[in-house]
Image (tube, rainbow, N blue to C red; front, side, top):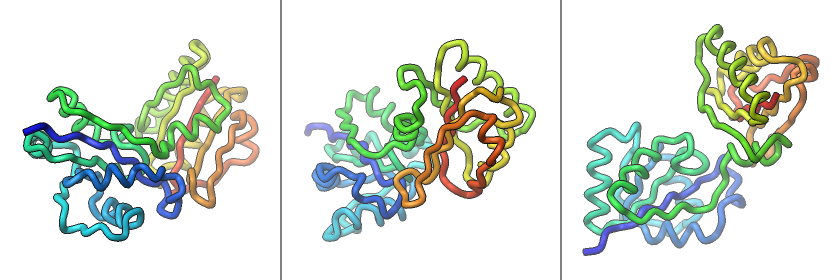
Amino acid sequence: MSQGKVYLIPTVLHEEALETIPAYLLNAVKDCSVFFTENEKTARRFLKKIWREMVIDDYQWFTIHKAEEEVRSQFLQLLKAGKNIGIISEAGCPGVADPGQVLTEAAQQAGITIKPLVGPSSLLLALMASGMNGQCFQFHGYLPIDTIERKKKLRELETDSHKRNCTQIFIETPYRNNPLIKDILDSCREETRLCIAVDITAPAESIRTKSVKKWKQEVPDIHKRLAIFLLHA
């Protein structure tokens, strides 16, 4: 029996932005019999939107969490049994700032075929629209929660950006967006550029790049909104 394949299935960044999902993704969904998801409820809802005739109960569903050993074991056993598996993130592309990466790593180690599919990535869309350096960039995920440590990290990122002409990209839990903005404006030089990309692909989308000095003149309120932050010194 041949081994199954892994499809990395992108989902929407905003639930109404179905136009950002390419039509060929449906063929991959139909080729799967098992799905490993970051959030099973939203993944099911998304798949029903792109394929109304889908019978949800005909498929096996697993939640990734942090891809514990038991989850990895089930994942590999199903692949070895010839099952094609789809991995679906909560938003955007699986494996990028996402627990699905652990399963993709396991599939690589087992020599499984992996098919990454095209879809919206908030990190790349923000970088594309920022006007910052797209030749050299780094994604840092979440910065430290502690204010002192976070300000220290921001200064390190700014120094590194200036030294290497590198765009620094990071994210924050939506309810902590405003404190992060305050720390950036308090820590970074006035000439450093900051891009704040909010609600990408949603009707309220805003992607704006300004100097720290100009942001200080009009500090945004993006409490509880999905955001990406880019810094270039």
